[in-house]
Every structure is written in C-alpha cells, then in structure tokens.
Amino acid sequence: MTNIDCVGQVCPIPVIRAKKALASLGEAGGVVAVLVDNDIARQNLQKMATGLGYQSEYVQKENGIIEVTMVAGEGCAVDSCATGADSDSDSELVVAIGRDTMGEGSPELGKILIKGFIYALQELVPPPTHILFFNSGSYLTSSDSNSVEDLRSLEAAGTVILTCGTCTDYYGITEKLAVGEIANMYGIVTAMAGAKRIINI
Amino acid sequence: MSLLSNCTSGGCGAKIGPGELSKVLSNLPAFCDPKLLIGFDASDDAAVYQIDADTAIVSTVDFFSPMVDDARSFGRIAAANALSDVYAMGGKPLFALNLVCYPESMELDALGEILAGGAEKIQEAGAVLCGGHSIYDKEPKYGLAVTGRLDPKRIWRNNTPAPGDQLILTKPLGVGIVMAALRGEMADEQAVQAAIASMQRLNKYAAEKMHSFPISACTDITGFGLLAHAREMAGEATSLVIYSSEVPYIQQAYTYAGDYLITAAAQRNRNHMQGFVEFGDTPFAFQELMLDPQTSGGLFLSAPQSCAQELLSAIQEVEPQARIVGEVLLPQDLPILLR
Image (cartoon, rainbow over all chains, first blue to last red; front, side, top):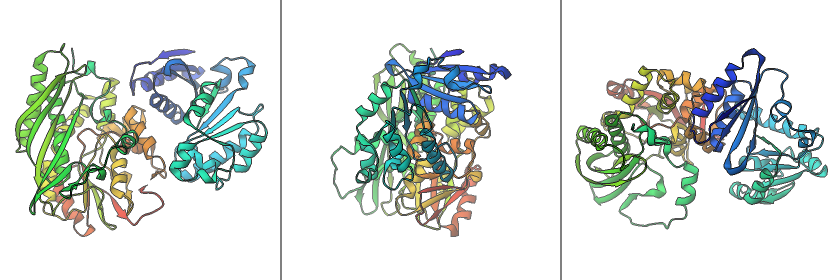
C-alpha cells in the first residue's frame, strides 16, 4: 500500500499526488491511501477516483484528518485490501447520504440509482448501524420518497435512521418525515465519529 | 522569498463560500435608506447610492492574496478585479484607494511592484489613486476600494434578465484551473500567459461597447464560478439555458480539468450549486470549467435577442473570445439548464 501524507496541502496537490501514485501501480494494481485535512480535498479525491474508475472509501481520523483509500486493479475490493481489518469491522458501518441522487450525470438516473442503492443495503449482513440523511438526501426519508418502505425494513432490522433537522426545516419537509428520527448535527457527528467504516454518497 | 510561498490560497478562489457567507449576512440588521438604490440585500456587484436625479455613486471593495508569483502582475490583476464591479453595474470609476496587507519579513521592493501594477490599471481605467491603508499581516494581500459614478436610470442589475434574452460572456473561463495546474507544476507557459493576460484585462472595453445597447442584466464572474452567477441572474423569474459547447475557455484548461487538476473552490461551488443545475450529459471537463473560480473574470450579460448579435460583434472588436453562451427562459424545473 502506498501512503501519501497531504496534510496541509491544498487542491490540486493531493489529487495530483494520488493520481501519480495510482498510475505508477501499473497493471498489477494496488492500494493508495491519502491523508488530507479537509473534506473538500476528500471530495476532490473521490471525484477523481470515481471518474477514473477506481474504488474509493474514506475514514474520519482524529484532529480532522481524513484518510481516503483508493484501489486500482481488478478483484481487489476496498474493504479487503485497504483496511485489512478483522471481521468485526464488518459491523459498525455508517452510511451517509447527502443528496437525493447517486453519482454524477443525469439526475433522473441518479434518482433510480439511489433507490437501488438503499434497496441493496437491505442485503448487507449485518445491516448498517446508522444511515444518515442530510442536505437534499433528507428528501429520501420524507413521505414522498419511494425508498420509505426499504428504509422501514432496515429500521426493523436494527438500523438507526437519522435525518438532519436543519435540512428538513430548510426544505420545508419536517412534517413529512416518514421513517426514522430527526437529528441535530451533534447526533450526526457522533454517529460518524463512532463508525468503523463510512460509505458516503 | 516568493509571493506565493506565503499563501495557502490565492485570488478569488479564496472567497468565503457563498453558502457560508449568506448564513452570516442574514443575521445583520437591515439598513433602510431610499437613496440606497442597491444595497447588500440584493447580492449585486457593488452598492449604488443616489445623489440626485441624474447621478448615483457606485462603491465597491475587493482584495485577495496573490495567485501569481510576479508582483507587478498580481497588482494589475487585483486592481482589474476591484475595478470590474463598477463596470459590471454600468458605472465609470472615478477614484480608488489601496488596501494592503504585507508581511514584515518580506522585501518592500515587491510591495512597490504590486502597487505599481495596481496604479497602472487605475490609470488605464481613467480613475485617480487617492490614498489607501496598509497593515502587517502573515500573508500579502492587495486590492482596492473603488468609487464610480453612473446614471441611476441606467443601472445594470445582476438579476433582471428578460425571457427571450440572449446571454453573452466576454472572457474565457478556466483561469482557476490553469492556476491550479501551475500550483501542481503541470501547466504550460502559454496557458499561464493566457490566464494572466485575461485576469489583467479591464472589463472597461467590453462595458464601453455595451453602453450603446439595451442591457437587461449584467454581472462579472468571480470565484463563485459561472454557474453561481447564472443562478443569481436567473432569480425567481427566469431560468437560464447555457450551451456548454459555446462557452469560451482557455484551451489547455479543458485538458487540465479532464486530468483532475481541480481546485477546492470549484468543489465548494459544485456543492453550492447542487439541486439548481440540470447538468444533463455535459462532459465532466465542461462542468468543471463552468464551476471554475474566476479571478477578475469577464462580464456575463443578458440582452434582447433583437440586438444580441450586433452587441456581440461590437464586444468582439475588443474581446475576440466573447460568445453568446445561452438564453433566458420562463422559469423551468431548475434555474440553470445545461445543453
């Protein structure tokens, strides 16, 4: 695994260094882990990874440091290569959903994908400990969402479903909450900080 | 010590994010004076205060840390950027004051160069430099407070386009991406020169041509990027269509964007625009160009279709890269549609 410390460096430097490291892995593939100190750099790294077809995930570390792990090459899943963690890290998965679509591109397709994504979360054993919804993601827990049934079944399986109250107020949909609870930012931060792994959409 | 070595981020890319800013501003008291024709509740480019029936003054301030290593160029860019808000309102700059922050540990020669670059642009604008204020600071920063005059009956507001209008952009996009590539030591010299020339260019020349035409709305492109300004222009009453293939850009910036030489500010702009733009199948590199933070960007204006082509030709005499980049529609599902 290649480790790159980009703490204190501003974009595009972390992206350039990660891209070079990924390219230098060649056909064999491998894992590149980048430390950054701001979430925008994390977003840019994952934007690059997604655009170039690498798998990526990230974990929030201490003091605002974020480790972004990118995997090049086939048959090398993030969770087996990157974290190298033991089996109990399969639990304590938190899914953070900050938008009502999935991926870049057509919003119409994005809405179909996010519906499919939430549906597929039900297949995970054990299920995620938390699913967090914020910004436009908070539409997904409202009564107009076509994911409500899937989320209710996740809730029945033990997943805590939290939606950002500031966000539902902002969009005027607080009264329409159809599944889970309203949370404040402290609740969201606590769930993220307690996560062993985070999937960020 | 170089200018850039002290800076974590430079130019308009260092602006506080639009979302963050509006949160803080909303807590301030509302000021009320009928002579204040445009105040900061309007999020316009500059404030306009009426003196009498035919005269209003336009006032604006802008400063930032260096985005280029050459002190003279930085001075020119910062001054062109500060003067631009007066042009974007339809005004003529009258006088300017220097704003300077400078590290005690740096050579004063470079400061002299910065101020000389600024003075060049103030002269070119036909305005006078009449003072300023300077303090010590860890990072160098420079800019101007500019006062201009305009006819209160002919203010170019930024959010009053009319359905059926056409949209014109006067300078190429991509200066933020080119400067990011430079920071990553991956920019070619020609691209850097094109970006610096564009940032130093006064919006005066395009504005002078525009004064012979009816202008529905006008703004200048800043660190928030084209799409944020388009959204501001669309307001509640219209939606804007942008033809991404018509948008002018610095040639190499398209390649750099495709190589992910991207800035933090562009990603902040992307987050801020979420839910307001229908990207359709616009290629990633074009999306990045339209979200790219511009330092001393061009004018973005809306004019009736009947004269848009003639207006474009007039502007192209002084800004050859200017293009008609879109049109104004009645409100659609989203304020900005990319085609």
